[in-house]
Amino acid sequence: MSEQNTDKLSARVAFLTQADIPVLKQTARELESLREDINKLSARNVANAISGDPMLTVKLLRYLQQHKRRSQTSEVMQIEQALLMLGVEAFYNKVPPNPLVQDALKGQTEALIQLLHVVHRSHRAAEYAYDWAVRLNDLHYEEVRIAALLHDLAEMLMWIFAPAEMLKIRSMQTQDKTLRSKAVQEQVLGFNLQALQKELVQAWELPKLLLMLMDDENASKTRVRNVILAVNLARHSANGWDDAALPDDYTALGELLRIPATDAMALVTPTEGNTCDLSKPH
Image (cartoon, rainbow, N blue to C red):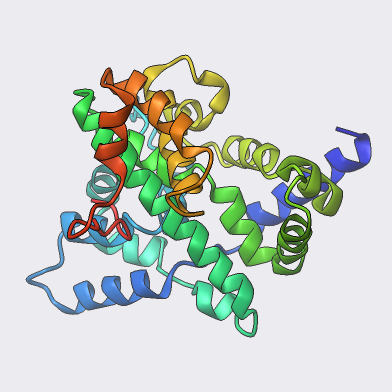
């Protein structure tokens, strides 16, 4: 990366670090509803409301990291555990569910649609990763789910804060399908989204375990391979279940779960009468 592009990346990280990251309107609505009903207001219910919102999830984890007690020896990566440590009322006061994504992208309908596509894709990836972690007897399956949910956080943030540039990238790739994503991103933004993601999670001092699980360079580790495969399958299936990359995904998933590729395919492809709603993870 050239010095000029490095400066652009650093400037973007600095901007996003200062920015007030918006959350999904549905999340804010659910959290407000819980707050108004004392019988339903609990760490578990609030965690369930947060769990499908990548932006609010990262805001909560980041806040907790920045306000760690000196006596705290372990990092917290699970939402319900974070809420128990912080306190539900403190969460509403310290990490309020605002501003809203829909307000931030007012008048930018196409960018909002594309952002929601990425969020939906992240839900699917989180659902897959969670399911496979359970099958692999990973007792810390929630950590794997969150890593998959946040794997493409940089892309979501750029749709929110740089919609014009992201639409330009999309237009260029639509016109020429041979263009590589990284190359187009570097041409338009001055850096690629993977580099931005890595710089952001380090600058925000997110839990080290999360950094490891989200780093594709650690693919030799089973848990990281789970996250990568979940993200890939969600990305490719978003193009339709006839996407050319899916057979390789089934083979890789079969190797991960130690089952035949045909069984892996049957495990994840929707069947008539069984179109699992992956719009929101557990």
